[in-house]
Image 1 (tube, rainbow, N blue to C red):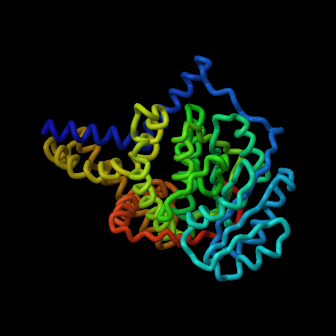
Image 2 (tube, helix red, strand yellow; image 1 turned 30 degrees about the vertical axis):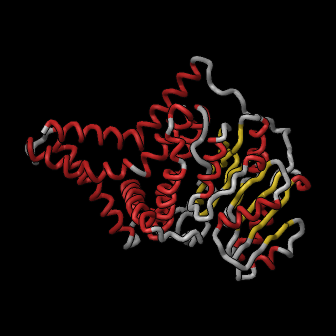
Length: 402
């Protein structure tokens, strides 16, 4: 029985550390560094205005073209210093033809659809500016997005800058919208602390930039292009910084089914990334970056979901040993787990009936997140995840940002 207790407490510690403990530790380290005067002082230079390329890979995005092009042209940055490049491989809905009607937009099209990363690899041949900014066709950029992104590149140690992903919120959000919004708020705070400690662990594909000279062609079957591109920049000896004032905003997934589809792909890509970035697990070579990478990403994509499954039967054995219905430690923890997953199940039941209780969104979304890891892992092992992104359906934009 002692063996079960040891395994249980180790598993519980890893689970807690993965989702909350790392954030608490990071906050404590940052506070201590500030008190000791070791906090980063560099904030960039607002007068720094290099030539940039705004790079969009698009597949059948005609519904978003006008809004995206106009949004990009209205950003607070000298228009003569911004080159817009659109790569529209495989688009057959008129996207490339419509784009050619806009002045100042370079369009590179191929009829073959080989996936987003193939389009990015090809399109990067046409980038001539020192900084390239990647963005999605269906996202709006904040007015100062480019300016806030590039000013951090004044520091020669910065190789990549990630913007913040924000979610449009509605007066009545479903579990997908509310859960995704809360998740990204928490992730954004972790990214701020990661950046202050040393480096962000991966960029958000909705808006991130790199020094063009640091571009490395990525394998054509890559699922998480933003993650792989940014981490390889960090592995080259540069840092990934984060500026929440540079933001991209989009609507949340239309429903939990669509959010699960998106999460499964991300999870499959996460496993693929861990395998391909295995040198980054070497603390002796990458030091702080390895610590951040394992704590913030690797555990969530690998060990932690397995431990969540493992502690249920172990906790049941320990609770039965001391009395399942007695008010004792392991029985309390077991029934706490039962209550948590029952809340997730109730959230699913009510969501399907359009009855929304926000108190249930967190357990529901947490369950969906971890379920997607198992489904994504199975998909990765089968090797049947297409590189051709099937975009999750998004909700209708109605109100202001979250």
